[in-house]
Image (cartoon, rainbow, N blue to C red; front, side):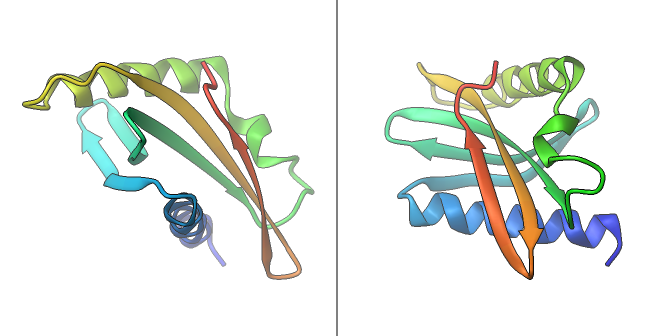
Length: 116
């Protein structure tokens, strides 16, 4: 499986995980000229911007190891652009990261809240 397919599979898995936990999905793969946000969701009164990293196995390390300070900084900027594009005022938001490692065909999901 190529990395793009694996990534989309991971994003779909993360989306289902969030829905199962009662979150509302607001946007998938939101793009602007500065980049892309994998998932924009709402948990209670908080809008959450979610970066999803997926690995087929642990040979290249855990997926969360790929989330650098620079990546979080970019995600923060994209989140502000998304918020600015909304008509309603959003009082609370945060950045989360979901790492998915496939073990024998089953996803091992690690969810880090408030990954600032």
